[in-house]
Image (cartoon, rainbow, N blue to C red):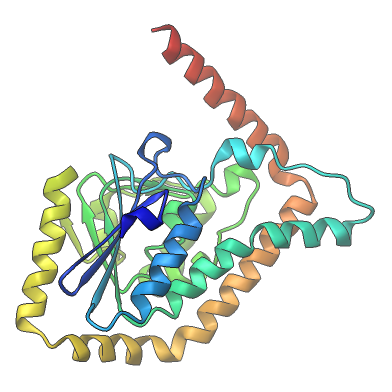
Length: 277
């Protein structure tokens, strides 16, 4: 089944569908076909007759480093006016809107299995939307949006506040502070943190979910998810639309351009240094 996808690994183990980001050399950043592949797999599992759990996880030591900095730094173009510029950026961010909608409307129980750290969009887009968050003890989160002239992406201002409370969400998203797995567990963002990594962590995720299926009725768990999410579904989608609009305005103002260019040069310098060693 994975042959249909280039940047994810996709498999079904009994009643568990597993979507694994598979750009480990790029720390599973959102380049290539990673996002379209993920959306396609979510669509497939949404109507699969046998699965109960949909697992999102990553290959390698990171869950996801978020946006591809080199790709964002290269965004440019000539525009007749600011309206044309705004529409161009709204079009660029449409893929993210569909990814979030796919997760918000996903009928199966959505399990986020954080195999390692997540940064930026990798940290912001998924934990607040997932129904259950399982994390490795290496899985810290950081969202340096303010440092890059951006905004909390794709409704994360709301979804994080729903789990952590407004003050904690403000601290995390405004100041870009790195939060440890223990802090996130204490704050209510993570359900479980396990001292395991790599294949050991992935095996533990599957074993944990299989145990839940032995004890609990799958349809009842799906109904629990539906009842929980129905009253907040529209607010979450509106939050995504508002965040995309705010992000596009930041790009219209060219606020992130200089900061991303500096970051790109920093990464290139590090890459050259590693190449000499």
